[in-house]
Image (tube, rainbow, N blue to C red):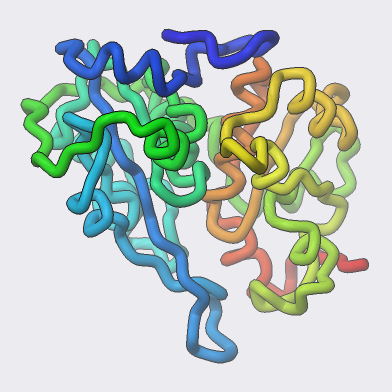
Length: 298
């Protein structure tokens, strides 16, 4: 796949828009819009600061030619959990992938029309289930449209696939592992939300204000060029993570509100070659509402 930047350990995890346009008719290519729309929750005192809706309606209005739509809210979240966006079981995940046309021999290309975190979330789940032939469109839909590349409203026609899951359980952790990491200098726990949430200056966004005790801040948005939406060059990403001590960590745990923004930090670390990264799936939706779990604020 196209090298999207110099210095990445895994440049194959990113593809550029020109590379993709040239290969849209490749028989093994599977392109997907992963968008979820997040809106501020109008209910005061709600457990979650946002309400979510599928990006399917926007997809139907226009998408990359040949692309399908992956429903993160429905097919790719655990319906039995009381927490949003929790990773599905192996059976649920492989069934959804097969229905979408993804098989063991597919090359999967992901993008979103909103924040890149939605594509990163599905990339991270594919990675966690042992599928390594997936990449994210660098700059996503916004860059595709800005470059006036072709747009389609035709429905996807991918035939069903067959995906063999090879789970990497170390890619996700729960609150017990995160609690054990508090005060452990060998683990770096990264908060992926904006500084106002991390510091607590934004108030109690997830039940309590602030962050998991001992965690550091690498906001998901800081990993992208503000003008193009593309991921920063490798040396700039290294600077972001080196500044919080990831190079010395035996394990890195990324978290956010519901495991979505954290997946963007985890993806960037994977680009750089880190192999010791996990996402805390429950994140602050779980941690912030449990008074027994330690938090701190500035």
